[in-house]
Image (tube, rainbow over all chains, first blue to last red; front, top):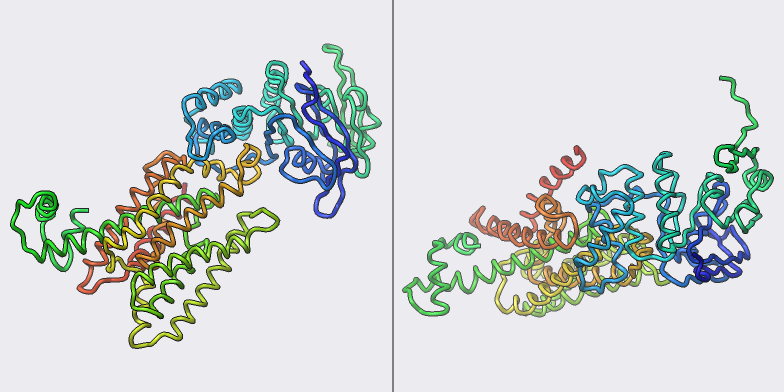
Length: 253
Length: 314
């Protein structure tokens, strides 16, 4: 369900220190859609996401978001003594005046999203005792409790096992469909972007490509940005295309 | 509190305290006028001052540990203590008036914080690290000025007064001082407790808090402003009292929920009680009154080392 553009990026230049990473970027992202950002380490994926989230200023150009943004950093290994429900409740900060404490409505909202990520049974558990995957899901519930329209995740799957990765993307897809949530995430797995995103941003050193995911991701474009070999495989049981990294170095095992 | 107000060089009973309090509203009992005057005019204001200061300092420590996400931070770190210490020392140097000392102390506490603000804020943004460094700068600057004041002070008269004042004491507590500083500290303490939820958000780190829609700079400086008012208030009536703000929040964590709203309330209560006990020890351990700063450090330092080891062990 696309209801106009939620994110409009015009002539955007992103730099880290004095180094220009991304130049003259223009794109629009409709509400309820998903943008994947792929590229090698150090190319500027995280810097781009931080600029989109409004945490850093762009070197030039503009980012216009017609709604609220929540951002999940790459490292979710934060230390907090709060329990899970208290942690999720912090998502209401945007709506509470300085003298207000979260009330029963806020608690209901927090519990709703905690149920959405299937962690309601851990509501009173200490956040620090959770596994990396559970922490990630709690922080997603926190972001959703803030009623965000755009959710930006920096390599959300990097700390997750395969089962939790599947769960995370299933939840994100449902949120896109049911709540018209717009999602931007970066990843090192091209298949994740290929199967979950409508739009794709491919960042290489000195090159950038943006477009419909299915149109621009192919073996040669992946080779171009990652400088390694890829092969394409069509899986017969679900008719989906997968990209497999084929190392040039042979290992004799 | 009853024990604290009835014990000391002049001992009396808890029953005497009860009678004195009843007499306040309806003269009923015959009492020794010296006991009555000591309890009413010295011990009760002293106990109230200790409680207010203890509650304030403990809450300050708790709030700062939350904002900086660092359990090793205490109120001294932001430099207000040194500014207030310099103000107090300067007040003693230039005048005999204890209210001038109090006002100077409070004023220079605020000046120290303004200095931290000017040094730490770069292009409209303050990081936690620069804040701590600016606190160290401000602290060192005002400690140098304290040394200068001591250097020029009369060694027979002013220097001992300054030295004793800097070590902290509730000996000069009075209703007049409570009226001057008490409301300020209590209002700031209440505001700090109300900001507990926001301290939880700030505890997540600047980026995370910002992404949840919190105005990080505004909220952090609000907390620091309130902490400044409390610390400057405490130093102006009691001199430099270390360790309380660092130790008490760690004790409170054993009795409280982990959110800062609850933690600040529990810290304030424990801090009030803790300071009363410390003051009782200062008066009762020897025939001479031991400076407050000495006892808080003697108890606080080993206790903190124990807590640290226990935390590392778990």
